Image (cartoon, rainbow, N blue to C red; front, side, top):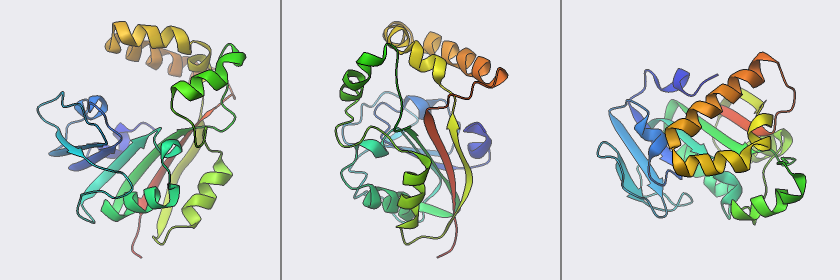
Amino acid sequence: MRLGSYYKTLKLIEHVGAYDGYWLSLIDASLKIALDLSPAKSYHDINYVRGDALNKPLKSNTFDIIFTLDVIEHVSDEIKFMSELFRVCKKNGYIIITTPHSDLKIFPSFLTDWIHRKWGHYRKKGYNKSELETLLSSISYKYEIIEFKCINVWFFMKLYLLLRVLWIVSKNTTIKAMKFLVTVENKYFLNRGNWMWIVILKKLR
């Protein structure tokens, strides 16, 4: 399911690890918080917060939806990271997490370790479903998993280096290209998913 399916009717959104807030800029919401260790203020309608995802300078039970894209594999304390996501999320709010699958490979395969280092994957390269389930079971909040799947990004991995260059030239063109690749993946049901996507509903304790 698309991210937009969750935020269409929601008002308060936080993006953890937002950097310049680009993805938040695509969303229409009454309050958009971009949390990052070194935020790059680029959009006037986004509130940028400099802070640590392990100790957020934000009130509890605040956000309707929180999304964090490919961040959890970078943090030093994954349990604290997850607990902070739940702390600032409202009851019946959503938490959306993406992370590379632990078995992710790019093309050519001999560059995989180099790419992981470029991505800053020094602690962990990614997660599999079992690892994420174990991590969630260790936190003190009640929750319901709404969606849990491994996304097909086989074409993306094969064309990563080309897309990386294209991103430098034109973000919009790259996004269009990625949308096309996702459409092709889904149409032909290429069972080669290597990116984890999880949507969690926070419930009462």
